[in-house]
Image (cartoon, rainbow, N blue to C red):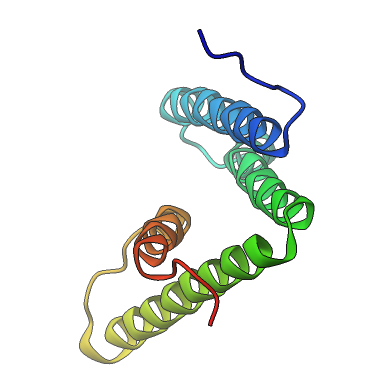
Length: 132
């Protein structure tokens, strides 16, 4: 049986991401149930509504921390993937914003920007395999 080294950077990264994403799902459920039961806008509802964004911020911090702990070569690859995914996300969001303004298309929920970024990151992993 293979033993997992929980002191490795990869293991710490994986456990951190799993922990923050678990908290994210829990907060989404709590806030969703509360918002359906109490739909009137109150300071508490506003406070609760932004809580799921905190684990999102922490996952970004985990990724950046992981990148800082890797060797120079791997850091360059991860950085290129991260920047590529960010650029594609910014491009698509800006284009969609113009469609909203000028063509009166519907606006998707803004919380979908984060999953879109990770989709683009995953796609970039298929193409960015080395540093030039």
